[in-house]
Image (tube, rainbow, N blue to C red; front, side, top):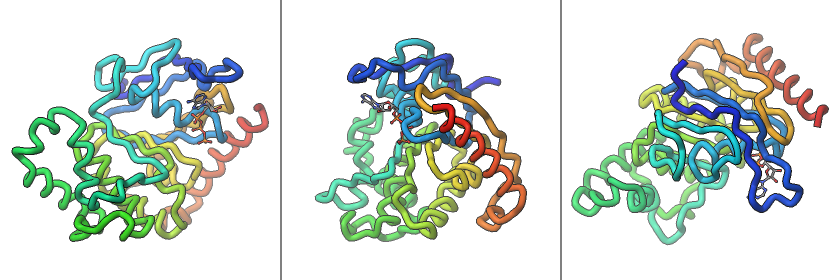
Length: 263
Ligand SMILES: Nc1ncnc2c1ncn2[C@@H]1O[C@H](COP(=O)(O)OP(=O)(O)OP(=O)(O)O)[C@@H](O)[C@H]1O
């Protein structure tokens, strides 16, 4: 398989680590272009570390990381990211928060001033896609938590990244809002076919959204199981009540249980 994200035999020790133990050890993950993958595992097993390594925010002590055919030696520009906390700047409107990555990432930074209207139209179109049409002029504190999280997804996608990294993006939301956002990210992925790596504690979320789920061991994290999710697409929420879906969730749960017990 030609991997779009190729993490090969990676070991990482944080410079500030008190015990000098690796956060991840011998970690190998290969993600195909356009694939939606999820990473699950016990708390502290190194899921967020994998995200930081794949996007060039940390560099491994051992092993190689290749994204889109290039070894990662600096922050990866073709990635967009969204986290559990949407972290919007309160003094900027939602639209201006969306445009923020463009003020940082080249070549958009150079083009932004002369092509502002084009970029604003792209931001408005993204807001419409996530059900926030016409909300761009509001400040983030005028939006609900779920609306802010949708806006943060738009911000992650504004520079049309080939890779979307999602670190527990729905973790702080109530169950109904979370499921609503599953539908939104599913539709964005179906329309734009970017590659996704989603870190989540929610096994139902992983199975609902992903083409493949990786299970990690307890720290130092490595992959202990990989599960192809062969449920048909498009998936809607009804699928979460089917026996096949429930069986896959149970299977993943048993891997996590084993990993926790081995810790
Ligand atoms: N900047 C850092 N400096 C030192 N140690 C760190 C740093 N960031 C993370 N760690 C340690 O590395 C290990 C893995 O952390 P990481 O955040 O990747 O785990 P996680 O699986 O995402 O955790 P959780 O599920 O609780 O969000 C943990 O033991 C953590 O304490």
